[in-house]
Length: 240
Image 1 (cartoon, rainbow, N blue to C red):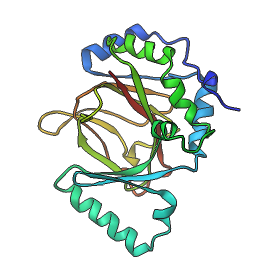
Image 2 (tube, rainbow, N blue to C red):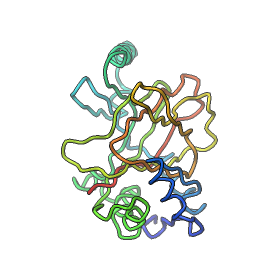
Image 3 (spheres, rainbow, N blue to C red):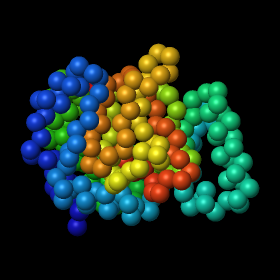
């Protein structure tokens, strides 16, 4: 039985070095964040997870549809749906990907006993919160919301800065849960300057924590049609 006690951060990390890089650059990558055993366990749980919702927006309206409901629609509907997604993306903010909002499920008492709910409990206990406060230098961090995401071929998240109307977000965290990602498959997390140029890009890497200050313009580039696997992550925000 998987529990939050099974989630172990790599004890050999020198977090002070990464805290300095985060302060200097506003973002940092921390490889081998979990122990090998924990990373493998989380990888397998996410890879085999059956609870996915298609998340997308239509301008300032945000929607979720179960993966099964979307898959059950006729092929013509799927084609027209994605065509509309890409048309909107040409001129405005747009996203489409699969997700499971674990924190919401826990708070709503949905799918009680789902093993991935342990990620929410772990992320909101003192060990992880204290680590984030120390790394970020922000003692006001109080809680984390937790998702898993899956970007399949054709999925993307266009430029945004993570500003939220209700939550005071300090930093975003994403932990890659995909092995051996080919850079030609896209799906890079990119950070943008005022002109929209790429200042820095992170390729999806297994068991690597990406941590970056909010607000900060960034995007997830389109996952190519020829991608050999989906791009999976464990992610969320540390909130004040």
